Amino acid sequence: MSISVQHISKSFKKVTAVNDVSFELKEGELFGLIGPDGAGKTTIFRILTTLLFADKGTATVAGFDVIGDYKEIRNNVGYMPGKFSLYQDLTVEENLDFFATIFGTTIEENYELIKDIYVQIEPFKKRRAGALSGGMKQKLALSCALIHKPKVLFLDEPTTGVDPVSRKEFWEMLKRLQQKGITILVSTPYMDEAELCDRIALIQHGKILQIDTPQEIIKHYPKKIYDVKADNMYRLLESLKSFEHHYSVYPFGEFVHYTDKREDFNPQELQQYLATKNHQNIKIEITKTTIEDTFMELAK
Image (cartoon, rainbow, N blue to C red; front, side, top):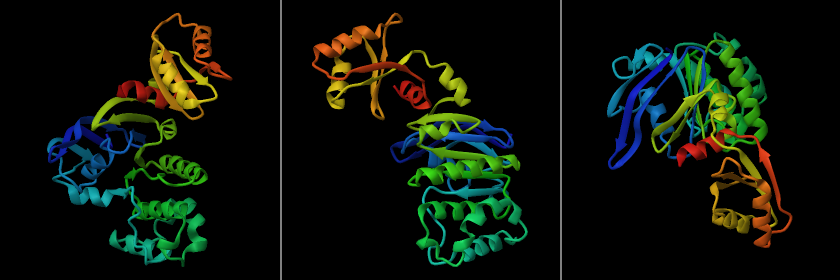
């Protein structure tokens, strides 16, 4: 296994950040830790990259123990933290040179690994890192994390605050890196990114809710989900929550996602109920289940 985590727990005073977490990654796998802010993702990353000690449990990365072999781990992993942490006053080129030197290598030696990413920021190589756009900072940080040819790549919420086009480009880059044999552990609060991973772990309040492929997790969702829409979203939410047969109700983009307690649910009955509540332009139709729907169900 490229990463093995066994019953890891970590608390900060009275707050339990990670609670008996276990999972494993195969070599070359793209694995996602999916959950909201405060779920424990960053704490897990810091334990695996030897920046924190766990209170309980054991973990290995690339075959090395996170406590006894911390020096070997630091030489064999790349870590891109959630907050941009490169030297803002150094240029793109200077940042890359600096990190290559730390690991006893050069940009030229591992250029093929970062070529697809670096060509996009090369026109700005003389620009200070602090003056780059969010997407360009992201690409520079990824280049610096890869410059020593790591076996395992840790990416902690790498697309947070980045525009949709840069997000798409970033995931395309990850797929190419995976093809080069690098194991990738990525965390994200964006549920739509979960479906881009080979396997995912849904995490909330420091506990793993479920681990599987995105397809299997979606397939086992227990109920049919309906998109419901009307003129007044807030009143619609209140009315649906008051409907005696409702199982779950929550906003989802321009719709409300609704599930019913009954197996023989008839949408026409809900349509009539909403009409009695004076809702206008009511639309109800069955919709595709997403990772977010599954997460909402498990988090209950």
